[in-house]
Length: 343
Image (cartoon, rainbow, N blue to C red; front, side, top):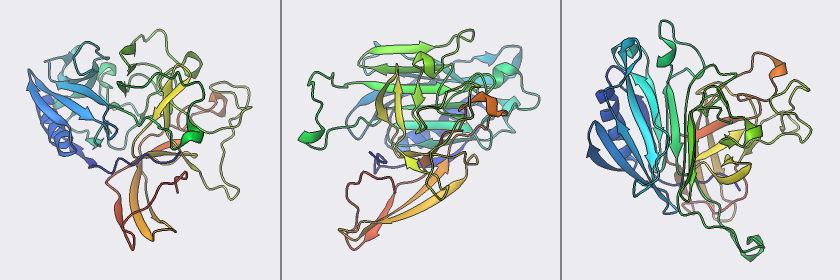
């Protein structure tokens, strides 16, 4: 595999936090700008998102007048995925805004069928003076890329695999990072997430029973030694890198119930702990056509475990890097061909 380039519009810009309606208006401008279809509903909008492969879902973003308990200056915006008919509904996520949050700065990174929202420069830190229920400060979700056969030699031998006709995933922050991981802090989700495929939806919202890779949670799949013990104290995890200690850039596979169902669009996993929101640029040339491609990326998630006894949690094994704008093509051929390599 490699990067699943959508070759579609991508936006990375701030959202106002002082008022839920301002937050929604700013987000609407971004989502419509990258190709989502917006329909006004009470308190906000409902969007139709369509992947480059033709898969569709809807996301409703609304101000329902909810406030953080015992802290009325903090207001929630709700975000919730559903299928095209509304018969299958995902988890109703809540993200904090309002006058009490005006000192914070949300940014959104959105593409044609996925969206990532978080406070700039903050993945795990408790915000001073903010009550616990207001620490709902990130959201991510969308429709993944579904791998397709590239030739007869790659066809499934059984021939009985169910075709994916509907799929989405979503996650938000909640709780302390070492117990409540999510896409902003690492590779898997412990709570406040959902996933759906072909009408079968799973919602996790139980603070007393956290999911882990052992329970088949929503997760990205890193590359690591087979003898590593995940989330345990038996051994310090070993990370796969090149011989010169440079990190690898691997496919950001996404899955649940111990199965891979797709991969994130316009993304790769770097097998290293990269600084939050650090950036990198790459230039590549197709040796056959002479075409070139320039790309710019940002490290979206980060969490460094406070102890080596915590195993491979957080971004110990890999950091999620997201494309911040459409690739710029040029060169003699004006483009690049298919490749099984990221770079």
